[in-house]
Length: 110
Image (cartoon, rainbow, N blue to C red):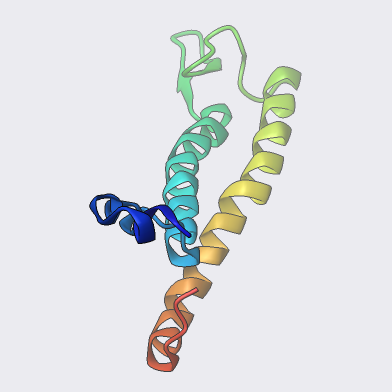
């Protein structure tokens, strides 16, 4: 016997039942939040500003000179993270947006 079968007052537990569509929705929300954060971090090594002496530094790390070794290392890490997380999330979002009408037509909800 479940709790709700024995106690009609706890029928609110049925509304809290975990389902695949709800699970996928939560995963999507977390990935969307992570997408914004990771995107901001990935592009930091690409934002340089000019000094009066003609050199350029990173906006976030002013001691790193653009076009030198430290920036190259930061760019490499950013590109790896970007290609794995950002590109994968973008691709999955485009695929889901493309397939959503057919999933809805066929009644596929999770």
